[in-house]
Length: 386
Ligand SMILES: NC(=O)c1ccc[n+]([C@@H]2O[C@H](COP(=O)([O-])OP(=O)(O)OC[C@H]3O[C@@H](n4cnc5c(N)ncnc54)[C@H](O)[C@@H]3O)[C@@H](O)[C@H]2O)c1
Ligand SMILES: O=c1ccn([C@@H]2O[C@H](COP(=O)(O)OP(=O)(O)O[C@H]3OC[C@@H](O)[C@H](O)[C@H]3O)[C@@H](O)[C@H]2O)c(=O)[nH]1
Image (cartoon, rainbow, N blue to C red; front, side, top):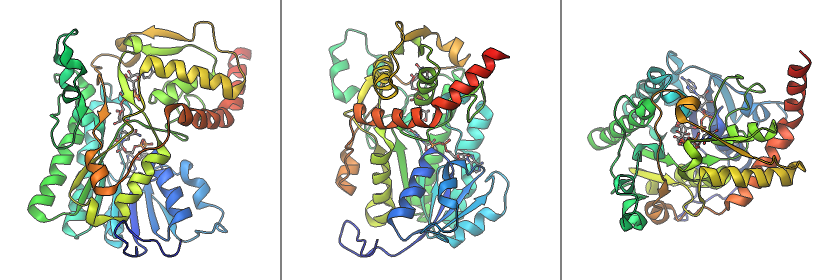
């Protein structure tokens, strides 16, 4: 831990980080690594702490005193400004960020991703504090290529689909497609942060994650989350595999995504935290362009890997098609393809992702099986006996 230096060889001083949304998927991984590998202190703000409980107790943990949990809802708590003032850096992760909510709870989605983030930006700007704000790859929306004829050769040209921070437009569907409420709220908060930087000198970094996945992502419905809840695709498919039921392919599973292992992505955030001179004023794509699959291919890979790690034989028909209206309800729409341009993060931070999709699925599904298989079996046997 001693002798940490930044990318330019300068010693890194211990800092205090106010992390909002620290109890979520990404926050839990960030806190874990900050505690085990750095001397930094974390003021962890969230309404939930289950995913970081192992870092808070018992008091004999080696980092005792370096992480404090504050159960605060940032919508309405006057303690927030005090915590931001105490910190050198604020990392804001708090958000509603599951697609099933965007079209069914659009008001909550917009408030969470725009209105609730406003005071955080304001307190950082007024108090001269640095901000790392989590946005999303969804701000790009659809690719330009999606609007070309199906057989156009230009669809193969990266200029029509690779998503670049400095060049790509943000293309959303019509207002009645409420799917885009999240992307639009995130885009507006990005623009506000950028303007605070330009007009008032706010030191900021904006992160655009491209489908980060790994252990502790979301919840398994009926086990550690609501039984009717719809998490993101990794947890949906994990749930299907754990219950030995077919994986549901929304509208045929033709959409494409690039998935990155959470541990690779966290390395990038570390570089941003510890290299302000290289990260301030930038927007960074963080993803793995080498791990592109269709959702259908993801389902096939997860089925194969789960069978390997659990020893269970896959179903004869492992997937089933479902319409987006049936699965998500009215107002759903989708991003067709998401390949991040890595030029800026490479140039500024020299960062590259490492883990292949096969490897990250193997470690993640091993975790899912170990954590949930028994609980799911018990829950299913209770339902059949009742
Ligand atoms: N995981 C990804 O692949 C991904 C992709 C794109 C963008 N993001 C962005 O990264 C951030 C973190 O995502 P995540 O995957 O860890 O999600 P998550 O849902 O696991 O974590 C978000 C955390 O914020 C907390 N939170 C929400 N509203 C709050 C409030 N009002 N007060 C206090 N705490 C509140 C939640 O309780 C939760 O623990 C989000 O801003 C999300 O939009 C994530
Ligand atoms: O059971 C399922 C769940 C999801 N899907 C599909 O799988 C794809 C990926 O779904 P995810 O739930 O991971 O969500 P998306 O990739 O669309 O959006 C995510 O992207 C970036 C972040 O901002 C958010 O975490 C979220 O909006 C979508 O095409 C979705 O329709 C299925 O086919 N079956």
